[in-house]
Length: 386
Image 1 (cartoon, rainbow, N blue to C red):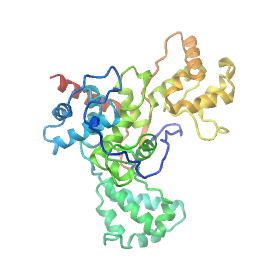
Image 2 (cartoon, rainbow, N blue to C red):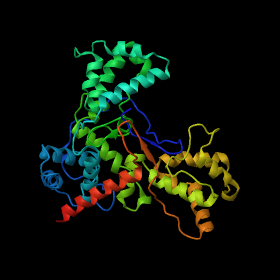
Image 3 (cartoon, helix red, strand yellow):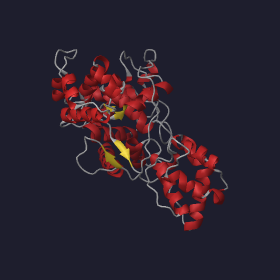
Image 4 (cartoon, one colour):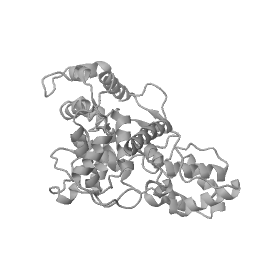
């Protein structure tokens, strides 16, 4: 419910879900306090002390931000834990997203959140044929903190509060189980508003490096945890097609990893096939027997590309990984598009996606988000230079 769903053409990027319990690493090693050796772009910087890095980060934070030193310490540890270089560009990228998403609030308030949540529950009940009176009665039940669920919903101001209400409602009220089937509708959180699905998948690939006793969901709502998973989502993946241009990473943060690269493929495919395509960066639907518009356009070029429908599907399924641009399909589509158009085709474009969420009250797009973050990023880099 509180998640922004990126919708264009019906094909949506979804991070692979994972268990909700944190996979914890051992105690932080002394090396965690220094500069990690691997930058997102460019060579590693000379090693500096943790204190020096924290001072540089603190200088880039808003002057009146409460607990500026704590923010700087957490972000320095995040870069070290992810083994990403705390370069000016990388730090400013994280700060720009954080400022855009929460204005540096680890648990940002959402206007009218209680009303939005109540309406979501009623909508789900309606889809299941549950009368609204039954919902009203269920919400009058007492919750673990002594207040009724209705009172807690009415008072909820942040996604962390709302997530806790849903957890209790799902765990203790039979109607809650029926409406949500164990699924907590709050899907983003923390200072970078990172996807909880992404965070849960990330710890399956890389143990969380900080002490924590709660679930991944709970950790996302903390300052350090939210910065850690948000930074990982933004910077901790290879994107050679972007040539170091962070604008496309900002778009990917909103639309999903490699969405900008995939949207460029869709644009080339449109040129090659003559078919109009939504440039949403999502290249296939789950059921191969019902191909989406992108897969259908690629199949229409099967003979020209020398690829079977099975080969096309196989390569499209690589679009959620690093090496899609090295697939036969991508290479041949770009070559055909450039042959037919007589000009080079870009390897990255901003996805054209309209953002949809109960929290959004005006028309916003992924391109709007990326450019707003990029403006903040450039101002941050200028402050660092000054």
